[in-house]
Length: 289
Image (cartoon, rainbow, N blue to C red; front, top):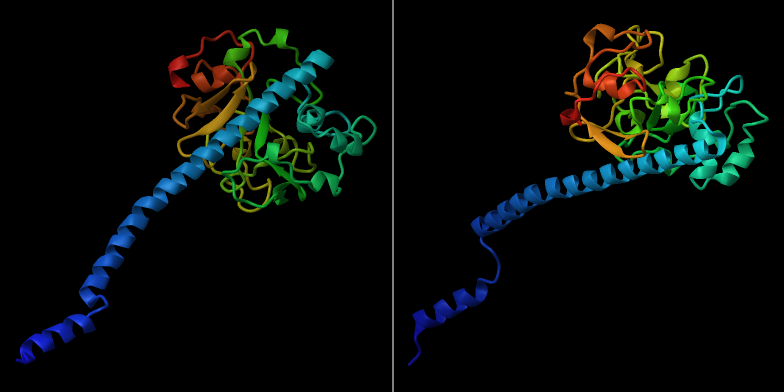
């Protein structure tokens, strides 16, 4: 005997092959939650990889500085006089850029805006900084994310390891400077008229101090915030010390607020300054780095 109700039930079950609106909304909500959990994790993994790459860049630069010192018996100047070629140029043969070094021929020429000096060099770039590869703060030269310590490499200097009497393990050699919140740097050398800030850094302002001069460099930056080391890593910046070891320093490291100016820093018995000066004789508080 034909069961009409049973047939209708079977037809209803057969017809119901899709999701109801409520079921669809539940699925969408679950997917959204999973994406919300996944995206931050992926971002953290990317930043961890970028920070590690940046740290490795600094380590390679530290080793290159020692390679240069082994040959020349001193560290390269932040910029040579009168050519203005920068410390990163003198390191080119030690970071597998010998052909570029020969093209620039820094021993016989002076810094100039050329295709070669606009060339992107990954070793001088931190992957965490998404800004363009050209630094328009400094005349359109190729960007660098690294600024050398003025204590180790000053203009025309010839600093020897023996002069770092506070110890190479306690003295900053090179630190980061991003170009999103700061002015970055350039690897080619000293750019005029903006001056030495294009190649070197100072501890006069805390780590990650924002640039106060707007979109140009550098006349309106009357306090010289442009000399600050900075990065786009979470919680601080990478530095390579004079023994080629890399350390991550936080903005909370103790500094000297009275020296936040355009003047060259003078010794102050606070950790950031003690790590900067190579021969002040002040002990370093190792718990801060």
